[in-house]
Amino acid sequence: MDFASPADLSPLPTAEAPRDCPLCPRLVEFRHQCRAEHPDWWNAPVPVFGDPQAWLGIVGLAPGKQGANRTGRPFTGDYAGDLLYATLARFGLSEGDYAAHLGDGLRLKGAIILNAVKCLPPQNKTLPAEEANCRPFLLTAIAQLPRLTSFIALGKVAHDTLCRSFSVPLARARFAHGAVHALPDGRTLYDSYHCSRYNQNTRRLDAGMFEAVFERAIADRDG
Ligand code: SF4
Image 1 (tube, rainbow, N blue to C red):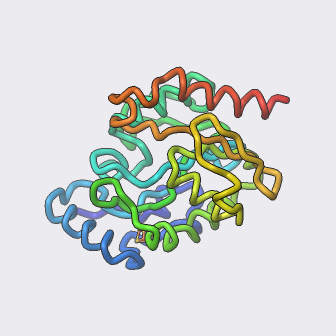
Image 2 (image 1 turned 120 degrees about the vertical axis):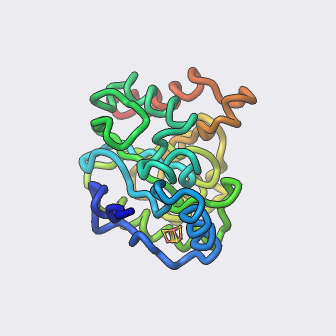
């Protein structure tokens, strides 16, 4: 089956990894395994999705197996995506109906979704070396977003990746749900627990807690 390249699907084509990015051997091996098991799935680095004029960057951990790794769009087709896309719609950050597949016509308005790591990790756990390998793609994407003033980090790995990206010592910016951190370049980082199925099922995160993070970011934007 022929697939598009990540760049072909991206609003920031020059910030994307190639479809067969070789930089993380463990993830490459897992990718090949998934391609053998599910040849009709995306099974490649997942491109960013959203508005290139976004003020808000939402940074997740890595593709979910049944979600982005299957469909080729961040958070699309899995449990985490149901809450994220419902929240984006609720705050007017999307246009059209989310229907959990690439062709649903959904567009983001003022928001863009990026991942700390672009390839599916086994057991949803990334390694520090993989986070470091993929960070240049994230930094290149951020550099191409002229209106970006705010980030929402979904989980500690995304938080730590953003801190490292902006040379913020982790000891001075500890991750906590609802925490807000000023970044040295004037942008703001808002922390949220990841909207994963696990966090929702264990009631670590509910819709109200998740929405409160977006509400705060929007209130700060509006002054
Ligand atoms: S995670 Fe990033 S750096 Fe590693 S192989 Fe995938 S695209 Fe390349």
